[in-house]
Amino acid sequence: MNQWHDHIMRPGNTTWNSYCTFLAQQPSRRASRQQANFGITTAEQKIAQPVTHFAFWLIQWAPVLPEVSTNDFMVYLLRGVLPDIRSRAQKTYTQFSDYTLFTAYLQEVENSIPSRAKVLGRRKNSTA
Image (cartoon, rainbow, N blue to C red; front, side, top):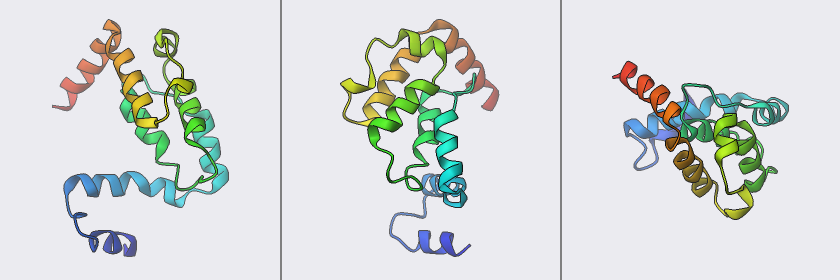
């Protein structure tokens, strides 16, 4: 609870988005380096999970693994996305200098796949 108190004492950290981000980062703060390394190297996108959600989950481990480079995270992201997305991606991570831009590109690829739109649309409708 002290972490939450420290978090909200910083200006701008009392928003719903800030709270959700804080909660999402908690598992990574409790993990050992070995657990975090295993998590990022074996991570796979779930069927009903958009690329952007998978990418956010993956990058949350960065504070635990400061020695892992942005390029390494992009490799793990590409390796972990669904095979259909990976096979349709015509650009590789080496063409991007930024994890966010690479994530956006993979999301565009995913959005171009009609079967993914159906799955993600169903997911969106079921949570509404």
